[in-house]
Image 1: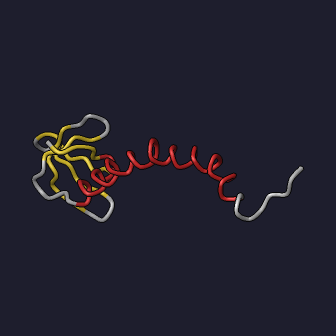
Image 2: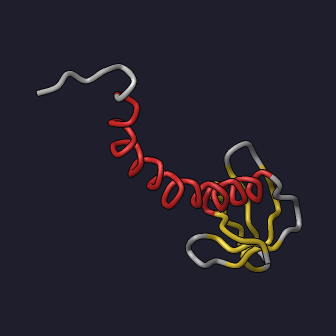
Image 3: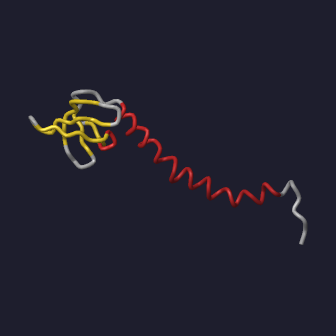
Length: 90
């Protein structure tokens, strides 16, 4: 068996690295953009915004705290939930 020289070693590693590079661009990278957009939406919540929670509740933001948001579901009915529960602005 011939010895592997230092100059051929990178060529032997290409077939091993190629699937990892393809997986990154096909699976990991496309998921980052929506995650960043959702994070920006949650950080940019303001009083009076109409939102939808992950449970499908439509409400108006009436209070904001560090990790929570107070929602007015209907007149006289408020609900406090995690900011991560907000998934969409109306």
